[in-house]
Image 1 (cartoon, rainbow, N blue to C red):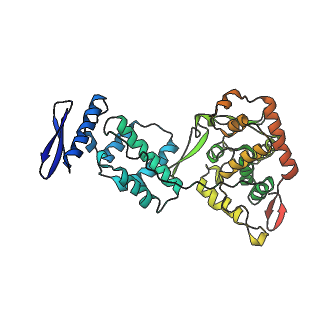
Image 2: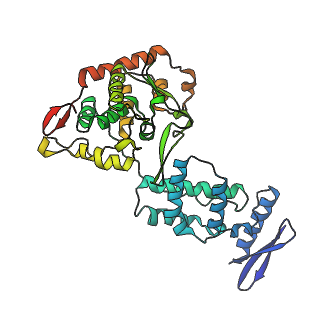
Image 3: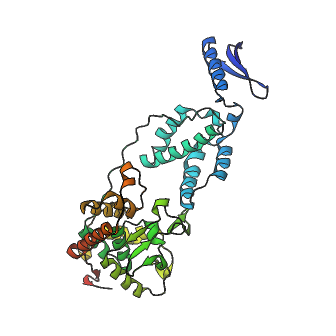
Length: 379
């Protein structure tokens, strides 16, 4: 049971813990406030939802270390978590007891600290991680409630990402060296993610009677850990392990590409056969192609577009070509979520019609050349 006592200039609530220790909560301004807290304690104890208040003194630093040692995610995901923890969560909350993390203070941290220097999406991602960590402290009985819940923070909607037409993809690719340009063409016509392309090996690229790229469930993507270490690992989600079928023209381009790089283990290696770093490609290849070159007569094109937007481009083309949702989800490596998805099936006939439409796009608007010294010619 819990009871109320006058204490100093106010009131306190006292109650017995499971080990018969008597615990006190001082600081209530009135007997009514203390009585209300005492009733809450008794209710939580009866319902087996009472959190031992001594556990709430565990600091966020201690809890994160314990949480991290038990949490299992991919190396890429942990790299993101680690960045959020080191750069945003621990600098603000270090030394704070779990029970001292107040809802209103979390709200102020998000609105005044995170959103003052980060985009809303990044601030929201950090809050989601923090809430996940605190939520597991609730599950473990360290605290009674998650102060991150129901914060009512109106995050702005992410702007719609751009996509490119067939002509625009060809133009962007044509401003690059052939191997880089083919990387862009492959991304736009398959919807493969950057990591799936940068880590793609020839042994997973089938250019025979059933041409396809197989994204391996264990080693199907290249991950950059903390922006330094490069390693092969699983793709983004289990649904991302898939076969991505290729239209005829892309098979021919990849065969020619292989003849240009006969000794390479990877389909799209970087300089001297090294693995590609996303940041280097963006700075040295992607952004210059979008920015244009006045000397070569290149106007700026799709400025602000990201490499990842080539996935949006593939999805848009598939919608334009009336490709069924089930096949679009499978091709892009997305999990089926709607009830109707379970009743839809991907057949060879559907795949064949989709590939025919992609081939037609290439034949009508595709084809490419590269500019060197101001003249159109193949490298």
